[in-house]
Length: 116
Length: 115
Image (cartoon, rainbow over the protein chains, first blue to last red):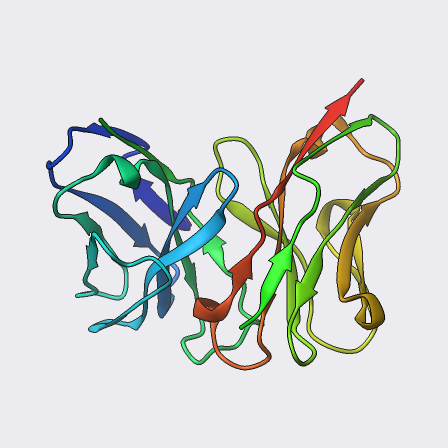
């Protein structure tokens, strides 16, 4: 059972480049989400999904797109990278889509992105 | 909207000493409260949570936390710290309805353990 898998672990982009951060989970979780972690800011929610075909914005969605075509995968796309998007990105998932916190939130190991 | 404050950015303790990490929250009703730990290069892992009932909750790795409504606090404690506890600790608060999309994380407290 691999849990939540994020790729790549590290990435360097130039301003204006695009890329996709991958997130996959093998736990049949309905809820999936993307956070960014910045020093002194904690974790901030970018986008989330409560099931295949359903996505919604979090606290800091600008500059990021997501889609959820399968239960397993929830990729995060940066269409035109900016230095302000330098951060560590975490994908997280949970079994329940209905809002029950009894099902814990499982995190991936993160992707460290640098935009120059 | 809720908020959470972790007043200590960095704490250093000696191995074997006791530990208390502070967390204060702001929310109009009784919130749901969490503590997560992040080891270097890893994602966050749930240590414990409080939903209702007994205000002293036990978690994994020997940690406990106490919910004090009068102080709007949910401090994390461990009686004897081990070198492997060196990590960053995040307190989080959520309203008592809705999903993880409504969780607010604190900025974290980095724990250093010295021999």
